[in-house]
Image (cartoon, rainbow, N blue to C red; front, side, top):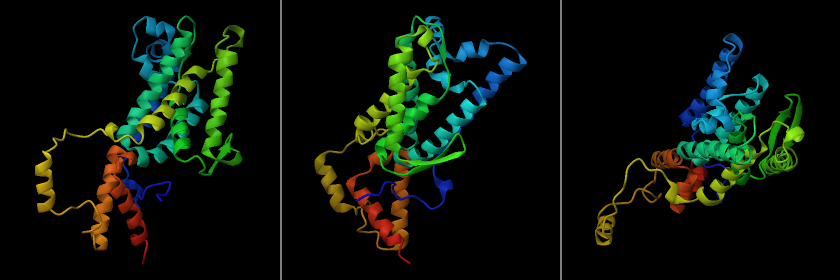
Length: 292
C-alpha cells in the first residue's frame, strides 16, 4: 500500500514550491499597495480596480475575478489567510505538482467569484481576501488525507488537535448556514461574509479531486508527444532495455536515480500522473533505501 505521502527527498530545498512563494508574495504585496492607497493617499481607487463587486463587473473590470484575493480587510485577516495558504499549500505541492496547484488556485478564485456574483449581481458590497483559495485547498487536503491528525492554535493560544475531514465539514456547515440565512435574505441579515464565494471555491476543490486528480489526461506536458505505430513500438521495446522499472536498478545509486526521476515527474505533473509501476518503485525504494 502507498503511504499518505509519496517518497520525498530528505532535503526540502529540492522541492519545487515557486508557485506558492509567488502566490504568497503577491498577496502580501497587494495588501501593502492597498494600505498605501488607503492610509497614505486616502484614495479608494486601488480597491475599486482590484476588489470584486457587481459594479466592477458591470463596468467590464473582468480582471477583478482574479485580483480580489490580493486585498484584505486587515492585518489579522491577511495573517490567517497567509498561514492557511502556506501550511496547506506546502502539503499539496508534492501530491498535485505545481502545475495542477496553479490550475486549482485559479479555478478556486474564479469559481468563488462567479458564485458570489450570481447571487449579488444587483447588490452593493464587494469581495476581498484569499479565503476561497484556502477553503479550496482544505477540501482537497481533506479528500486526500481525511484522517491525518492536525494540531494548531485557535486564536494563536488554544491548542487543538483534529482531523481534516472534520474541519472540512465544519467549514461547509458554517458557510452553508451563512449562505441560507444571511447572504440569501440580504438586507439587515447580511453578515458581510461572502459565503457563496466560499462555497463555490469548496465545490471547485471537490470537483477537482473527484474528477481530475487521478485523471492522467489532465497532465500538462511540456511538449506534444507523437505515438509511433504499434509494430515500431514493439520493435523498439525488443531492441532497447527498459529504464522505468527496478529490473536494471540493481544498485543503491541506480535506485536513487530512478526515484529522483519519478519525484521530478510528481513535482511537474502531480502524483496522479504516476503509472502503477512507478508507484511500486517508490514503495520498493522506500524499504530498500531505509536499510543501513
